[in-house]
Image (cartoon, rainbow, N blue to C red; front, side, top):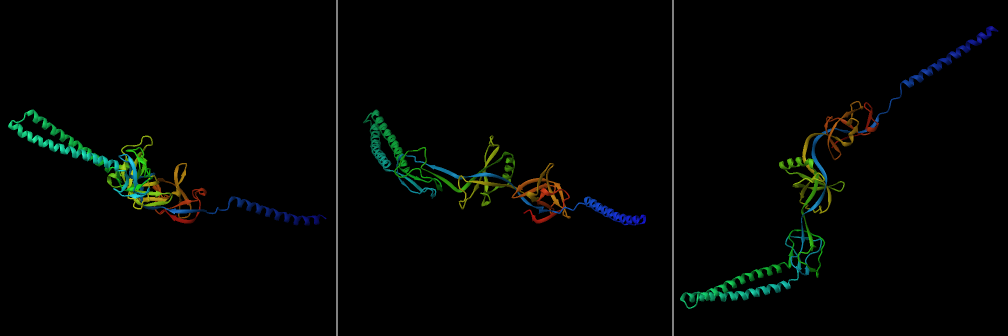
Length: 379
């Protein structure tokens, strides 16, 4: 019996040993798996290339289009408006016939003034002849000196009267001339404020029509006062060009030139007003229109440029993720300059040809592996 029990114990001991070995192997395998976690997949990103190019130094601000000149047309005389020679909103040239005021009262006044002048001219001629005749008589002693003096005074008085009549005639002619109103500038007419048949007052508060000159035309805008020194510097060495952006993406093809800098800084806003002149050949610009003015001060050659979306802000300032040759990333601090059209000038920190991450930065840490989905360059 004891031999049988011993024979049964040997196989059981062997089975237990095998089970313990299997459990030990499983435990070692589990510990090995925990010590070596699976590798993380590369982070998908988009990339851009650092390039070197010439970049314009510009100031961008909101501007307003103004008429080159504006004239409020008023009548210098009173009377009934008998004729309007244009349509409101019509383009007119300098000297174009605009209005006719009833000329009949002024024609009658001119005729009366001319009649008075003719009468006094006749009396002056008679007085001069009398003065000449009495001058001969006084020399011969036929008349007294007092009589001659009286005749001479009468002649001088008539001469003064004639001069006054001539001034009256000239004024009457001028008043008659004012019955016809002409355009003092070339431009576009606005709303017609006086219609045929209206009684017009001389120099009334309300203009009969307003004319705006739109060729050329002004664009007025303001810039912060800290740029005044640079503006004066670059204006003294050459012209400052101004480009326009109308709406969101529509660039105005024609460029203008800064022609006016205000003589004082606005103390309330800390800005200074400038005006640029545009030829406005296509009449695309209109008074009162709001636009974006882009003034180019100078250009910066050989500037280091990256896509603006590559620049991130951290606790220690601005930085970018550089993609190295082994497709791992490195965070590098940079000093950024001006930004223009989605590009930023880097003053310090990058070299041309380096690749930077432009999208996907939120999942990155220094040393992380990346997969470039699409490559792009700063333009």
